[in-house]
Image (cartoon, rainbow, N blue to C red):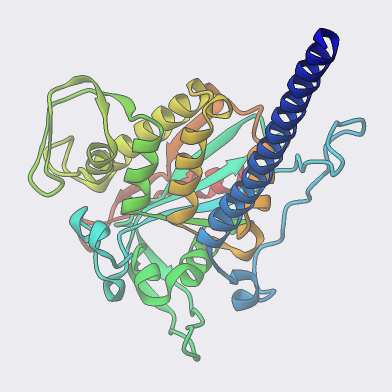
Length: 351
């Protein structure tokens, strides 16, 4: 009788272990399915965030030639070789997006769109060095005829402020105007709005910037003593918009602050191991994609990740920031014009 009782107890224990293992297996399988579903939803959400404009179709073939792109050397671990050729990207910071958050941060209405910041980012062949050229928005330029989304086109205008191109014809006209004054093909276009920039900085945990002089700007609502400061997203955006009370209160002073921010953001990104922090990685990706408008060549998470992977060898200390050479306009002391031949020489170096 005793032997039968022990065997019965052992059998019951085995049964319980078997049920527990099955339950654990089902739980693990369920968690795996939920994880895959969550990853799929995250990818769909981030991909769906991105807005795009078909600039290539709008502008056609009447543009500067493309730079020749080359694949990465054979033997790379990637099944599809990453591009390593030079690339030019027009990056605009826009105050145009409608919405409560943008308006709280100083953005204009959708009808009053302006390109608050304009930078041509040139990636050298090899993608290990970059040159960021800022174009002062107060530069007087010849604005070319631009196609309009509603049909028809704008007329050629002489002596117009550079940032009027975006106001008149959106991203398509901004790209065409940049190509007209530089004779450099813009391979891609990226636009980020006020709220998105602030959200990105917050997702990265803020950004550390050193200012050379006190800042007290009633328009940007920023007050900082000269020195090093760790800024949150709202403060970083205010710094990017600060113009008055620094230097000669011109757009050139603001550009200097924006270039400091570019370097500081790159350093913050490189010092943050996003891959080890999935939650922060998602927050950064959501901030970027949720505020982004690109050309159709970059309008998917896959393409943006591919671009990012091709830049993994680019560090902040290998990024050079410059401003297009300008001089005061004869017609208006509050405006500037390209200084020649220095400006043309700069653009030539990026072709």
